[in-house]
Amino acid sequence: MHRRKFIATGCISCISGGLILSLLEGCSTTKIITATITGADIIVLLADFEINKGNTKEFKKYLVVQNEKLQYPICVYRFDKNNYEALLMRCTHQGTELQVFGDKLQCPAHGSEFSNRGKVENSPANTSLRTFPITINNNQLKISLR
Image 1 (tube, rainbow, N blue to C red):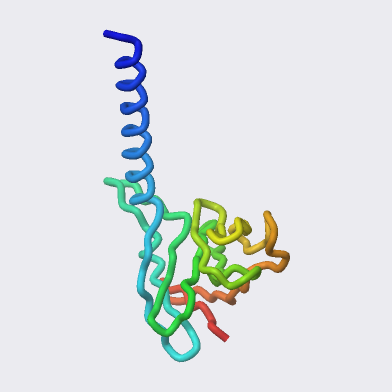
Image 2 (tube, rainbow, N blue to C red):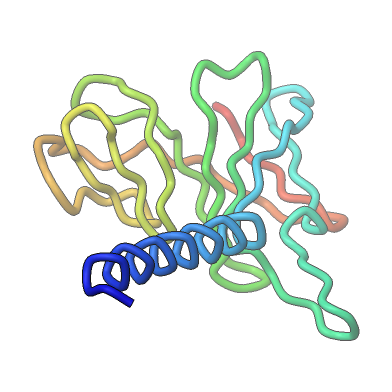
């Protein structure tokens, strides 16, 4: 095999393998759900965080929650069974909808980054994200939109 062909084949294999792994990981760790708004609360079922793998139960790190009444989605991070954080996915710099990348939310417009607790980690934004109070009741998260 010629050197050029070897390098081209190797590059294509690496890129293809990385893309497939990325797609598979994305499917198992993220989920966009449409939730119901009841009064001033948006309701998320705790079961929406579950990933059933045979006899073991694992959990998604976060869910992106949307509803047609919301201008921006809400990202809900799960830290443990009683510890969640709900963040409005609106950049505090210029109002662009944020994108989720694991434990960070990132603004595609100017690169601001926020932690999974809503704190600014990279400018130009200088204000934390809006958070929402959460209560857990009857296997549901009630996220107060007030």
